[in-house]
Image (cartoon, rainbow, N blue to C red; front, side, top):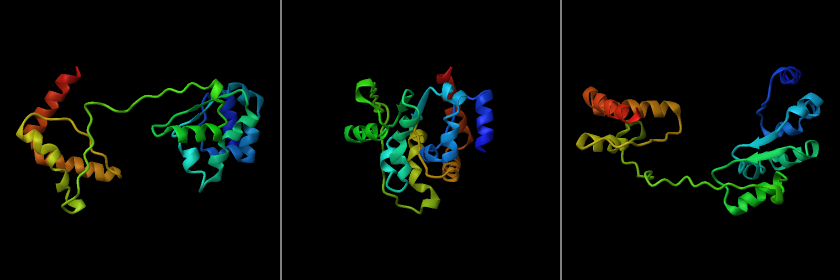
Length: 185
């Protein structure tokens, strides 16, 4: 697989996605020492950067992720996360060997005035979906209000959507879609 990756990289690749534990795989280290590949590397990106701190307890390679600097000291590191309080940010920067003097930190809030979090205690069996009925009940009584429902499985999400559509009826579904599309153009 690594030989194929090397050949592919030589021909056309500009990006390579992998887990931090591969940084320490002997064959992968050799691959990234290849001159052609080394020339193409621009940055290492750590999405969900808080994981290098949180996951290092059960996967120690995450705690070593900054050692990639030993092989590529001049390549920038780009780390993103929605959950980096100051202490976690400090520790992640240490793990990733990110120099504070050469770092730009961009803080963006995900707080939105039009978004509200609602948590409710379930009263009915989970498989009945009756506890989410309130989401569409308001649109039956007045104008439709947009909402998002998060589920832990795709099938649960699909079943929830089917349940809510069933509560609305075809005519109401059509009116909601017409209204929604009118605001999208």
